Length: 291
Image (tube, rainbow, N blue to C red; front, side, top):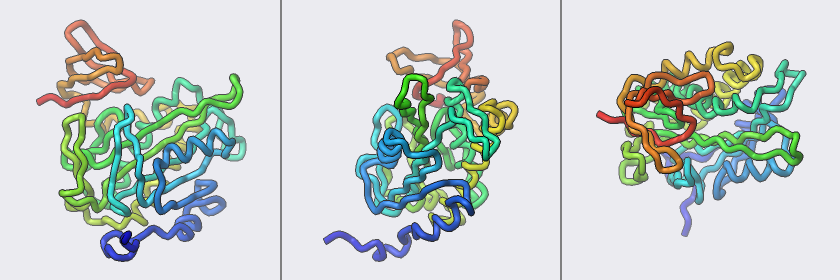
């Protein structure tokens, strides 16, 4: 027999209608919000909607994912109602005169997962009062362990001249217990807000704050035409990112690796590593913090 959503008092279900009233236009920044009891992947669901022509602003939340994904197709799993699994649909290449948003250049889209990281770090620090930091490019660390991951995926436009949509997914461990934690292939231990001693583990206010903070940063970024310097995003990310100043080993998608010191994140969102043969700018890769 499957467990009722109400049998675990520490993990109550989300109230979809309440979230819609708080977050969906005209009262909030998003256009449509769905809470699903179970789905394979919120990113896959939003990508399907994007290909069908869904406007920007869709939010899909899952109480349980059966095929959640991280970078490089890795699984991201969490027990039912023990975390936040949310994906949003963005169309940053489209102008929106009503919001004073010019189109952002495709080259700037690499900042979107970093933008989500800043929003997530600000949210859990403010509400949960935990020691949060960011590991480039897509991990939220709490107490030095991985508590959340971010996955951004481009969805090609229907026409060759149509800019891609971006699906931005966030998976945050909230009340996951020690015996429920997944193994992390990049070597970092995993944790949850509860295990880290968070002052707040109620998913409802965490989710509301996260989506509002994400919308605020996205609005700043869009008004600045995707320029991370102008909107303050680069400065904020550098302040949160604990990869910088550390010795690292970067495993590149083609199998090459770089060993050196992470010195900055450049204007394109790439990690700059000072290696023996000079500075290397990395757009994608697994970063291992070395002692």
